[in-house]
Length: 87
Image 1 (tube, rainbow, N blue to C red):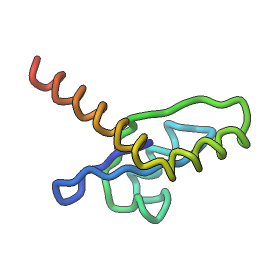
Image 2: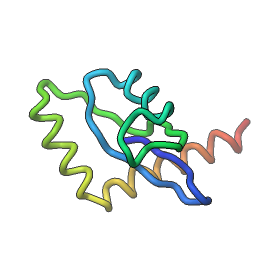
Image 3: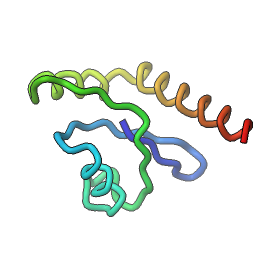
Image 4: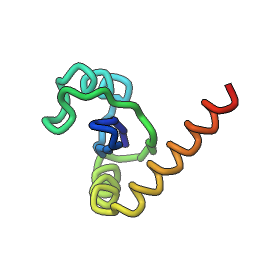
C-alpha cells in the first residue's frame, strides 16, 4: 500500500507487483496506474506471498477493506509524527 498527500488529505493505493522498488519508482514517475499519476507516493505497507494468485486475492481484500486500509494509514501517520517530534 502506498500513500500520497493531496490537498491536505492522505490517500492510499493498493496493488501487487513482483518488483516493489521498481513499481514505486514507476508510480512516482507517473508511469504507474492512472490513479497514481502526478502524485508523490511513499510505501507504507507491504507483504510477501508465495504465489501471484495469493497476492492478487489479498490485494483484492485489502482494496475492499477500507477499515483496514484506514487503520494501516493511521498507524503509519502516528509513527511518522512520533519520529518527527523526537528529532
